Amino acid sequence: MAITSLSQAIKVPIITENISIPPFEHIVASYADNVYNVCLGMMKNEQDAEDLAQEVFISAYTHYQSFNGQSQIITWLYRIAVNKCLEAMRKGQRQKRKVAAVSLTEANEQGGDRFYHPGVEIERRERSAILFAAMDKLPETQRVAFTLQQVEGLSQAQIAIVMEKSESSIESLLHRAKTNLRKTLKAYYEEH
Amino acid sequence: MKNIENEIEETLKSLEGLQRATASDDFRHGVMQRTSFLPQRNPWLNRLRLGIAAMLILGLTNIIALFALTSTTTSPTDLSSEIIEEFYDSTAYFFETTE
Image (tube, rainbow over all chains, first blue to last red; front, top):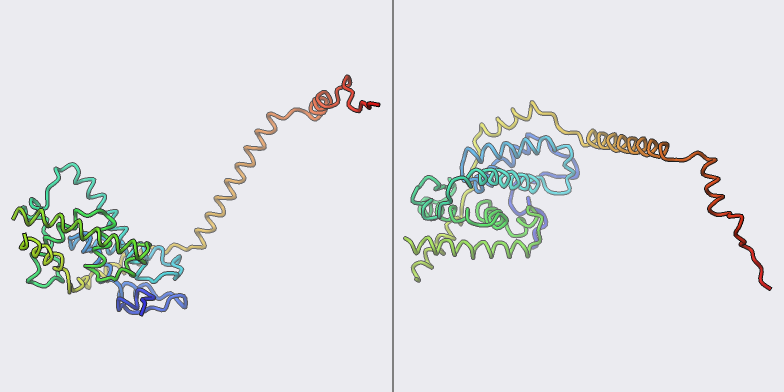
């Protein structure tokens, strides 16, 4: 059966839009974890993720009355979250440009950049940290699509709704992301 | 080589079955506390602002156009004499009939 709506597929509490817009507390209570998890997957830092997730809800709150219910609330929140994270990452990158670029190997050797997602199984922790470091090397759109798929567990159809792209372009983005990750990981494992 | 390929595949699969990270309880409380000090943006107020801005721009354009016209236009008598000179030249014979 084709997925018709995002909330249907990701098993989040369904809120009937178009009929009445629910109170904002309900939105925060229902979707805080979804937004925080996306921010954490993108930012790889719990404090940054929490700050950004708060920013997402603040932004959603100020524009809540103009939310027309044409899209699902969760889709709208994911979109704000992705944009906020990209904005923060760009700001961070600008600051990082002053510092010499470090390779994936160097970053792992330094240990400081290692990120362990709290939801990863213990036996996969080290590998997931290497994968998260490799994801940093991906172009923006590939990184967003891959994070939404791997960290938040969204399907290609759902990612397409969030990123406002066609399903086929998401499929190709994810394919290119995996190819690029394979290249980065190959270089890493050849050195180790 | 095969070993490296296996490592890569295993690493790519390392996020499978990942549990969603949960925000702290303070997070929800913090958001609600922060929003309590914020006004919600009223879409109608925005439209009203946009309308007023558009009217102001239109009004200003009109005033500028009016000033520009009054400073360059010639008096009606000058204009009529110019028209007469240009189009009704007395020396010209427009309705010449040929037989």
